[in-house]
Image (tube, rainbow, N blue to C red):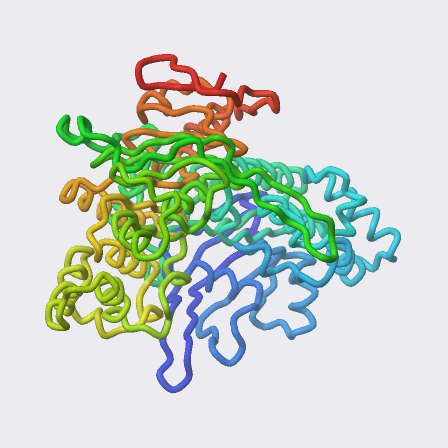
Length: 568
């Protein structure tokens, strides 16, 4: 006889609004067994997070209501519990890890206080015992010098360390069920691998069940026993992970898996010999940059972000700049468009040195090199209509009448696959993928020769990501655009890049043709990045993780083949 499931969601429906309620989750049913990992997958708006919030009773009060159920946990219907019983259940028996730990950790309370509070409330431990438990669990999740770390605040931790703290705080209470909502979306590939390994270890040791919410099919393949696929608030398919990846039954699941970029997949077509025979469009030579911290309350400190970096991008070519957070890749991208000033070195765009350009000359140079930011919502003025957003660079460039500007705006929207009526709307009326299309349209308004794209798809669903990558590839073919594509997603690198430059601690440690770097990596750091990348194939589980030794070479580049260089 099969044991009853730990969690059973039956015909769950959730509606938002009162006068005209809108159903966002409809007739959702699934189970999570004891010790089982179930992945709840789907695109933004599919209802994954609303389902999770319904389980823990964290739906926004007054805005949402559950219209169907029940939700049974350990044999009890959660929906019939009073507030006190739910508070006891939440954290104590059901733990939750949110996508962005900085928003769920209190910035004004020390890590120690935030960890011990739950132990005192739910476990009845006194201050000393709670502190001992907090230190032990922090050490268990790999945080060194845990005693000192308890006195620090969330802003003093990196993103990966904050996520470790969240896992430690939740697992300190030894919950029966852990709900993890996109726990690795914003993390570097190596940190993501560490967090996934950690979650796998702590849940296995504690016998905790895991409900993993994600749109990353590589993470699903690495972690899940079973997969529940959602779309438009409904479940479209449920299956064991191996069966689902091998033979998805529903067309939506098939399309979702087909859109996933693979590190072993095909790369882009090569630029023409004519384009490659010309001089580089973008040339960064000997770039160094040091940031100086400190202030009147603390002594000054210096961080070297870039150390003598040289890189070139040819016409119609995509160069992917990869590395972990803090490697210097975003700083290099900002220096390329003169959003950050280098301490030394030169930036050449189409052969012109723009390093010291000012005023009109700098504005003219910037029309040839444009920047696409990671978060389009933060880079679009929320008060401007899309027409005004796209018209602004055309007006700055000058020489166009109002009628011609409107025609150009309509043409730009068409080129990025948006309808003409989008011009009258505001940024908040668009999805994340549509906003990124608008941001790309704005960069195209001034006919640039180079686009620097800083993590342009990292926060997007897999199918929307595929659309944006296809859009950039199409624009590159049409206009022979040069792309400097900054990312930590190596599967995306395979799909878009002709050449790859790998950065570590402010220096390029390996650079060459994408196929050479990805298929035959020579530097220990590149090998460690590739070994940590999740593969969307359950049969790839258990691959060995390689680590890069601290003393790995970081000196001047030396050629190992005509177009493959590594640090010596």
